[in-house]
Length: 274
Image (cartoon, rainbow, N blue to C red):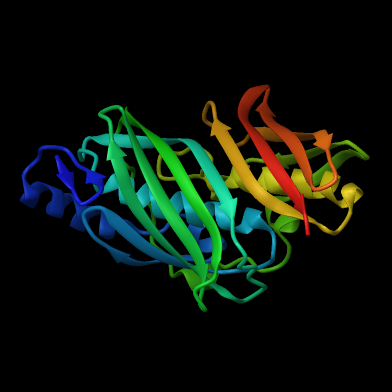
């Protein structure tokens, strides 16, 4: 049935509220702690969260976007089902947070279609400027979220550069192409034991940054659209390859693939000239 502009399943309200209360108590995972993400509010269909930005790269915000939309979705799926991120799309705004700035997220479930759920989120600076508008689709899968150890987020916030945090090794960098390598470390796992959906977003953004630097500093990210085609396994190396597809007077388009032997994610990133 509809409630406002949100589609929810025909389950008793008490069941939805109980599920929401259960999800609201989920502790943070290690990626969320290291990226400085904190849940600030939860209802049956919406989540608020915040993150202390550690740099200007859009890649810092992938964990926040996946966390906020994913938590909202977990509140409407049955307790004996899990979710897997399928797609995340960013459209950036005028807000450009710097190091130590707070970014607030408001995520809302938009549609439940049985086997998949669509959620949206706005990421804003503390002053209310839009950093990015996000839409994310999650596939409903068998499996219960595994318990994870809770630790205060402010103890594990990584600091430093995004590349250092992910252990990036630059394998190739020339005018229209870049290849980066990172190992999927145990701390990168989500509650299902696979790589958190925010990590591939960070890899994409870093790879785009390498080739983007060749295009000139006056380019910035307008949109990032990523498809997560299969789970990234902990322990395996992830190779991100970015290729410039087109450069115009105002817009550049870059395609990125991330592989663990097989392709695990593909992305299209559009850059605009300021």
